[in-house]
Length: 543
Image (cartoon, rainbow, N blue to C red; front, side):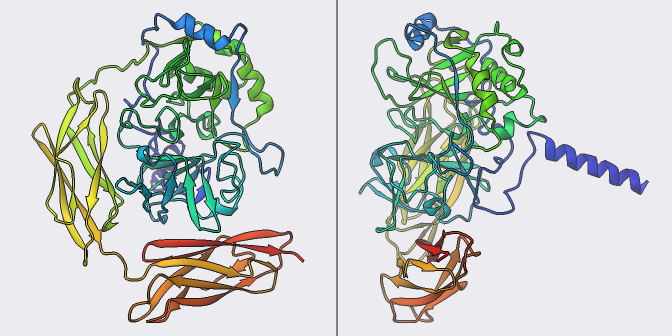
């Protein structure tokens, strides 16, 4: 009997592990590049625009004209805009890499070009606040940023340089466009940035971009090998991101325009592979067949200007482009039809208030936090106006926020005051007789904040030490300031777990111990104190 029970438990565990809807844990080590996404899948609720079954959606009356525009007098064939390394071991890659982090990843401030349409910003000053969980590895290591080169290489003028971060603890995603880390200033820069919660259908405010031109999240629309290449996943379950050479305005679910070309599709338009297309006749590759079947059921969503009919996917060395490229080329724009522009099926049930939250939480007084309200279903015609209130003098909120028609959530700004001691208060939201609350903690500005981390020298021969210097912006408090230290590559560079800046002092030094590498390599040294992190790069040479 015990043997039978044990066998049943083992079979149940296997079934749970292989189910595409199993609730996955965070990877054993984070941050990590390209780990499977947190379950349940697909990301976002089942009624999110990325996950809708569009097989019965009406065809737009101008579908043929839009397809003709894409074909541009010829035949425009599909192309997989994803793959592995450009050549074995190369810096250059194909597709979108993404980082998986957990809820403990230190938040970084980013200075944005388009700050007024980005998240993680103090909108009264335009300055970024600690908001984005950017791994230190992205600064100096290859394959964390789109294009392949690390973030401290400035390629903003030659590529989109997206950086995507999935928080596996909270099931959220942070996305940045056109990133660059300035090592001299120890600052992050980007064109724009956006935050999305996988647990609701929050849409960007009309007119706002995201890290994508259409104002949509990028990650949920990527073709991922963990879906397509997993035999246990029979239905990929979501639409794919597609680019076209030009666009004209935007329609739901997009929120932002990036062109006014007559005859072109708008951002947010949906293309559907015709039901009459026999995908089995086009390719014998099971992975490509599964992708094509998703194009028939969930379609493509126009998300950016680029090459016509380029389908976006993840960077993953398991992709085989010698198979994918000819398979995709078997399909052309003429195999697709355009779904009625702005198609948005009505909600299946009345919307009720589901949640209210704030991020970051806690927050340092004087910095902005972003509040989010979520509904159980899409907001009705005219939207859903949710009343807001604060029970704390340390933060204030607008009187209400309106969830747009068809959306299931909306964000609002929380203004915080400078405080002398921690202050925790209640934030309330009310809609249609239902009230939800959360608490927000506003902390005082630390008396001493980590100002810089420097290394001298910044390049050493393995076996030689480097000296690190920690500097605070003010004198350390009584008892000293314990600054946590870490190295991204302990095989070549080790640091003590922490260094103490003595009370009344503003700096302290520590030794970086190095080891002889097989080849020239680098390590990122990180320091964290009072919620502020700094990094410095160290090159360790063989000779």
